[in-house]
Amino acid sequence: MRVYIGHEDREQRSFDVAMGTARAHGFAPLPLYEHALRTSGLLTRPLDRRGQMWDLVSNAPQATSFAVARFFTPLLAHTGWALFTDCDMVFLRDAQELMQLADSRYAVQVVKHDVGNVGGKKMDGQVQTAYPRKLWSAVTLWNVDHPANRRLNITTLNSWPGRDLHAFGWLHDDEIGELPMDWNWLVGMQPKPANPAIAHYTLGTPELLPDCEHADLWYRACEQYAQ
Image 1 (cartoon, rainbow, N blue to C red):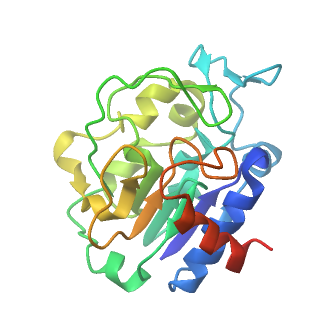
Image 2 (cartoon, helix red, strand yellow):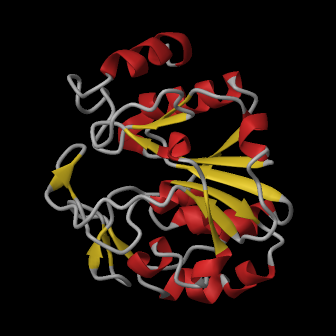
């Protein structure tokens, strides 16, 4: 299984924590750099970087540099199974446990959160944009060889609004499988599961919000993996 973790310059320590904890639990993560996709010519959609990033295709703010880059995962992985996660994660359980959940019937598998119409701001003042299936794409297990994923191509990736990509608009409902909530636990938005697999600091890790809920978990990981 190929594993890609989105890189964001503003969250370098958080990225290091995600990469380090992923390795410690048997994953072999690779960084997903937006600028590398642009240099390769794969990612061509215009982005206004003055102030908060603004995706001109979506006509909407873009909170992280990998907001759209994540959907290039099947093009990068080519075949087999692949995992994408945001960088504000702490991995807590082993890769083998996730692969036991892989189901070839589905094009992707995600935690199907129902967070309602989340608004306001997060992290370091980034605007929370509302869209269907919000936060599903933060942890995505991709069945790269599934024929439904062939609908996702360079044209759709560079021309569809980000909200449609995050809503998995190229897929039918029955092509989206479900992962247990443990694999995308929304810290500060949900109670802590009995046995969390991935802690997702979607409102901001302690790197940006030092007193956030369950900061101790992140700080312990940071001491080990982000020196």
